[in-house]
Length: 240
Image 1 (cartoon, helix red, strand yellow):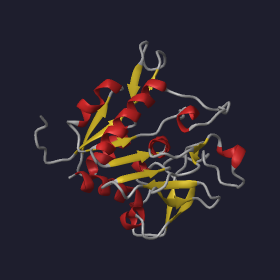
Image 2 (tube, helix red, strand yellow):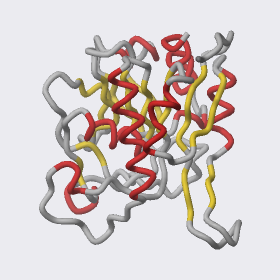
Image 3 (tube, rainbow, N blue to C red):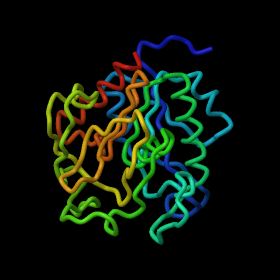
Image 4 (cartoon, rainbow, N blue to C red):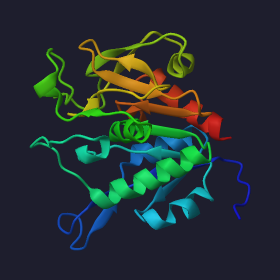
């Protein structure tokens, strides 16, 4: 039984790497700024190892979840694709865990925030599809894998009016960083596109059927604008 905490407990999904580099054994990792952003907004960050069969047990302890990004992709078979682009790489156990966690959180109507790859998985869970490699399908001059540091903006996004995201950031535009080669292609019925890049790439989604179900393609944990901080504030407020 979860004891009541004055801070909403937010589960954050870890990345994983095989043996080598930092450790001679397989290891988990997460950028500190994910946790810092949750704590600064008033939440209690809890990092979650990849144990798909324990997803419900984790959720018993949580008030909301944040599915983080990473340098890997959703398996195209998960959204019905019959081919797989040569650039696609997967982390199957991580995805299996995040899938179970996200489905369980939505079934409980817990607040869900998906960031970058987390938005892409959220879209698939909600019934949508993905672009497997943006440079092959989108004409334009925007570098969605920006060459400048992630602590700086790479481009702007247009925020759709009358959406949860617009209500959160109180603006029709936001400057964002960008670190992805895949993106949302189609959304399912009922899912709202709340942000787009100038080249038409979908940068944000939400599902109003849930109390807080939001995905953004950029990385607001860097807090490069007040809009980024507002997203974390909204997650914690929804989880309180």
